[in-house]
Amino acid sequence: MRASDKAYAALRDDIIEWRLAPGTVLAEVEQSERLGVSRTPLREALGRLTAEGLTTAGGRGVVVTDISLEDIDELFELRETLEGRAAALAARRGDAATFERLQRELLDAPRLVSGDNPALHDYYELVGRLDTAIDAAISNSYLAQAMRSLRVHLVRIRRLAADDAGRLTAAAAEHAAIAEAIAAGNPGLAEAATVVHLHRSLSHVKAIHASHPKEHHG
Amino acid sequence: MRASDKAYAALRDDIIEWRLAPGTVLAEVEQSERLGVSRTPLREALGRLTAEGLTTAGGRGVVVTDISLEDIDELFELRETLEGRAAALAARRGDAATFERLQRELLDAPRLVSGDNPALHDYYELVGRLDTAIDAAISNSYLAQAMRSLRVHLVRIRRLAADDAGRLTAAAAEHAAIAEAIAAGNPGLAEAATVVHLHRSLSHVKAIHASHPKEHHG
DNA sequence: AACGGCAGCTGTGTATACACTGATGCTGCC
DNA sequence: GGCAGCATCAGTGTATACACAGCTGCCGTT
Image (cartoon, rainbow over all chains, first blue to last red; front, side, top):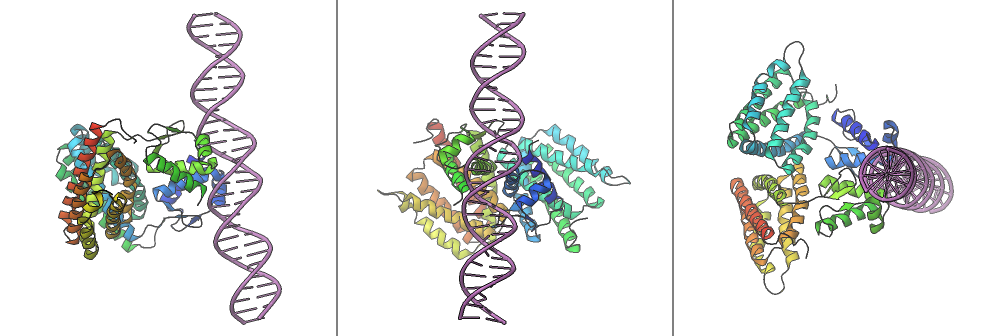
């Protein structure tokens, strides 16, 4: 693995996991020493992060981008636009069997998130497979790329939301509804189901955020 | 101006103006000598181009990204998604007076593109102001950013389309219809007008492309 | 005491030297 | 004559040294 990849992955993780708080200035020498790479690959890593919007290349140094409540609204507005369309396109172009299978798995997902030993990793992996299946089904690399760049920021927010078993169970049902609509080849329903899901997710995130405005890291 | 900015601007222009054909390998030493900068800022420029999708960082060296006919379809599919939503949001949130003024200017635009001495630059500037006004009206930086990154590729395609006076006159009327719908605060109409405009643009581009498949630069 | 200017420093921007990897072409052996 | 192995090299990846700009704090002057 290249040094720049290593630096990029480390910084990206630090930002997403809120170990580097918004507003933190990433000085080149400081970070290059901390991560054990030279300034050159570190600069490349910072460039990539800035291109993704995780950092901002303001006048003096690179700064970790802030995510405020208004940003969350904007983010979900774009997300609704992109994922709504993606779901509709997937319903037209996707393979029904693939999404039927995903629907069945999602309907069985509640057992992953509840109980004594919740397998959250398996749950997120399953949801990720739905995203991947939609990406593949739309066969539009530009749209897929736009959604990928959006998901980086969403992961950052998920860390704030601290999803509970109740929300995850409901989300699994919503995801199953999306998969069902796609499998049925119903674009309008797929888009509607996606919009509903995203609105509920947003409400949840904002409710959490409003009740614990200061608790960023745990 | 920094050397990396200079290299970035030069390469970006070369790609957009089709002086660097798709598939061209951009070797670091070669380009750094050609542009009169060192390899370090050149690499930063290549990184930015790759992040925008104008180049691809395949295994050996950076390659100018290809734009095929299928890419154009995909591009316009995303464009319809983003700009349709943007027009709808602008209709809800925008300032009516701003878009009324733009509408009047656009209705007067046909005189810019026809006659003995067409002022194409003024025309494109006017259309650009409509884009800018919409960007500002939606007050969603993520959506605006997504559209900005899309427009880079569209400029590349515009070079292929070689717009004629007839198409530009029609396009001006379509733009005016969009501005009118936004000024009237009618989101559905604004989105519909945008979708219509984009479909006609796409048809035009594909017609040109089908009749002159090889003529990339002139 | 307050303000202006200068010096030092911190940190980014750029250039260049070195390392390493993958490819290519030659040479020697079969 | 063909193929395998090696040497050379072209090109990227990384490190480091140098240049330069903006800021900060001190000192001198008024």
